[in-house]
View (cartoon, one colour):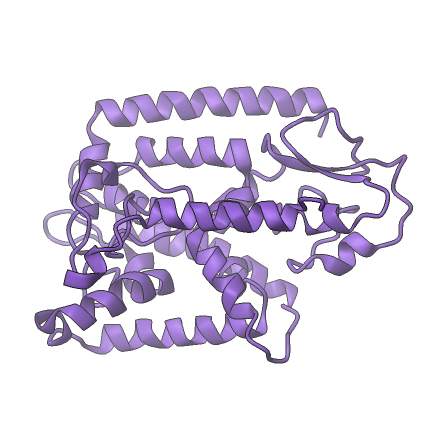
Length: 48
Length: 284
């Protein structure tokens, strides 16, 4: 893969990641993550 | 004294372990941290049910959002994984993952050391697709909620970091132990034995996060280059690589965790690791 293609791929990927992050935060996904993470996850510890 | 990549990496791994698991006092009462930092994901695999964990596990978070009633795709966690992957690739596994550090320490236990057959490397992609991406969305209950299948049926990090400590502290949890815990305990024991025999056995065979970051190794800004003018073809880089990668042939291999052992071993300084793209001319 050429270096220019790599640079474009990285730039496009980073822009996409920023858009995804902002959109995800905007629609409240961080709250779902928080809700899951602050309670003991029974599945994770092998009981769920 | 030359500060090698091995020294830098070990230091950063210890710092990352401390930052990811700062709430050590929670071990005493069998509690977990419940502050707002847990809405952010750790770059490496670290169970959010570990009493000391200060951040969410990205694989657990991805399944939680994808399997929730409100959403069927997590833009937030995907965006984070995309950013970590593009910046660092599998350097996250090599430099920042707490479970990776644990596996490296376990591998130091004296025993015969085995090579991993190539076919096993593809298992983690099946685990990623089936247990992390498909099952939490497809296998839902009457309310439309999916379960985190990877955490539930496989993840040995959750059993070790969260399960053992919480079960030790809470009798009511111990009373709920059943066949599922037996399955997860068996996977944990097999993983630990595997890690004694094979370097980073879990990372290479089962870890869905490693599978995701491996896909970014071709594009990641932190990368490995081999200068074709300096390389004398001695093969020392390949010999020292515990992930069984040949850096000269495949510097962007999805299995390379960017540990820098090859760069430390190179007698001519042909192998470079870092963010800059101008330091070496790749052979591949």
